[in-house]
Image (cartoon, rainbow, N blue to C red; front, side, top):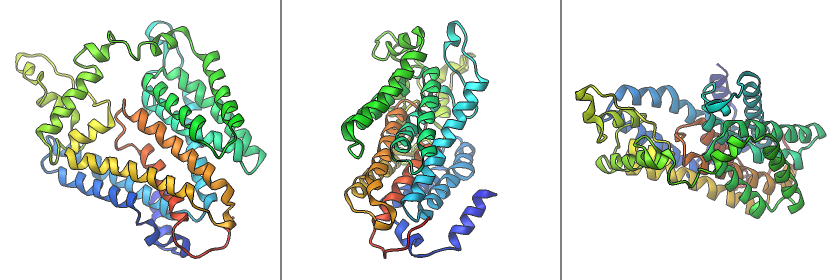
Length: 380
């Protein structure tokens, strides 16, 4: 109901800073092309019902969410509010996880399947939210906002450690590297101080099992290297599905069925042996296998155009009424969040996740503010 209300309000209210023309960016065009390609892939999908459900009961809503979020932005403060909501949502979820899910001995040393996300998915969510926490710590308009940013970083870090995610750890390192080297809108001492806070929380809360798990990231004996259900083997088969169906793929949400019908192990079923319908565990291979090579191009173009929009937005002067001095910092925070997602998504099945398209909407909203438009009064 709130989603429908938001759509109606956006369609009925089009002042200068909400003109639909400003929303017609490269990112929006590529995203709509991706949606159209997903629809075209449905008839030839291995299981068309799976694809129809994903596209029309899920992804269409995600695209509408993107359009409303990016289109409704009136100024930097709106992007701050949307980023604050994203951060608050991640922290609230982390709080629920900390209060509802306990760690134990043995294999229970880390979090398992949670509500909606699993532990690995949540780790990537936490990494994407952390740069926004840094932003509010340093540039919060009120002391309460700065306190909230600091508390958010601590809560997210504790829950992140409990997830025990190796892909999340790699994403955290990549995001942290960007903050140290490229988050130039914040003084280096601030960047190092915040990263030091995050590192301290990790050191205090991480168990010996956690560090043992992180130590296996590059191990050749890890199951991801050796077993048929390991990531490397699944990725190899996924590339094979893409090459077998290069135009439209096996259909949205059909990687699992492809594992059960097209993989080299599918023939086992006639002898009474089950074949696991594995997830792709790589968002890029997921799109390539499910939507073919054109679908992968559209997906990569959505991400690349979002980075391009952020880079251009960071280079331009903002509107004087919207405190332009905060724009580069906010732009770089969203860039760091998007980098965290891209690296984390390399190990996870998140191609159609709302997480990505929320960050892309923030990028489009920031880019829209630097478009050629009349000056408008400050939005409180």
